[in-house]
Length: 232
Image (tube, rainbow, N blue to C red; front, side, top):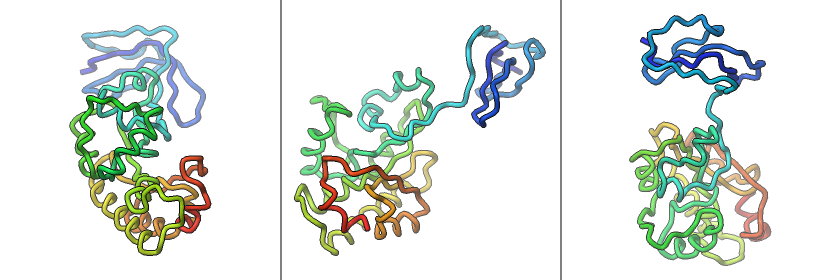
């Protein structure tokens, strides 16, 4: 039984083909039928006539900073109403983290993530953060293990090249984050690192964990000359 019928709307399939007009029948929360306008015979209890509307696959925001907003506002209404159904988060985030790093990070990324005084920042591991997301959020979320956070946990705020032992520790933390994200649906741990094409050591961890690495250009938060040895 078709529970919902969207009649005579523009349909974009997301595969690059030109849009078409048609009817869309939805059953049990899934698209069951797509047909030319007026051709679906439906016993739907609700018929939605949406002239001028467009139906498209959900958009993926590949660089989002909603790590805190998702915890405080799981419905994430601002993004859902824009058609975004999946976000890639963790560019700068709160896991893995310890108390000392959290005190710094809350101030550093307050401009993008906010810094509510009444929010309980009580999650310290990737597993804890993902468990909170799994309690229920409206969009999908793919979590990146942020390289900047690994560095802060191991090196702190010192502007210098990490030692071999420190890089080993960062790799261990990254592997731990991957393991904690294993077996989840979209909410799986990956790596976010600066100049990731040169990031040999951590890339090896990414490869072994069958994950994905992303990269951005170095910004002003960490000078490139202090991290270049870690990102080769």
